[in-house]
Image (cartoon, rainbow, N blue to C red):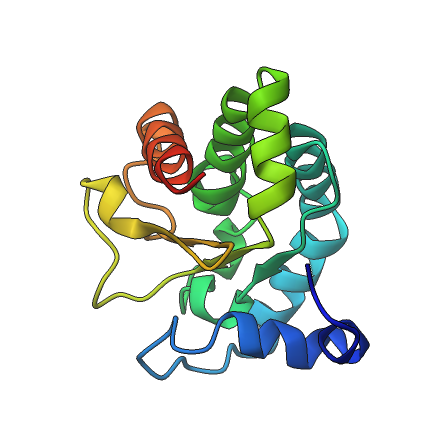
Length: 170
C-alpha cells in the first residue's frame, strides 16, 4: 500500500522512480518522421492494445512505454506493422496476463503485486530468442526488453516467458 507522500507525486516522477536503473544506455532522439509515426501508433493501435492489456490484467495497470528506446532509426514506416511493436510487446503481454488471471487466485495476485509495466528496448541486453532474459519482475514492476521487429512469429514464446517470470514473482 502506498503512503500519501507517494500517491501525491506527479505521475511522471513516480514513473521515473519506479523504473530507475532499467535503461543503461543512451537512447537517440527520434527524428520528425519517427516522432510522427510514434504519435500515429500511440493514437491508433496503442489505444486498443492498452485497453486489452488492462482488461487482461483485470485492472488499470500503469504501462510506461519508453518510445524513444523502441523506435528504431530508419523504420518509421514499419512502426504500425503487427510485427514491429504490437506482436513483440503488447500481444504477448496481453496473452500472458490473460493466462495469469485465468482464475480468482491469479487475478488477486496481479492486483496485489503488479504495480506497473515498463516496455523498453536496450540493444545491449535484449535477448535474441531466450525471451525470459528480456523479462524481469521486481518490486511490482514488470519490465519487458525485447528487440522490435525481430523474430516476429515468436508471440507465443514471448507470452510464455512473460507469464513464467510474472508467475514466479507473484
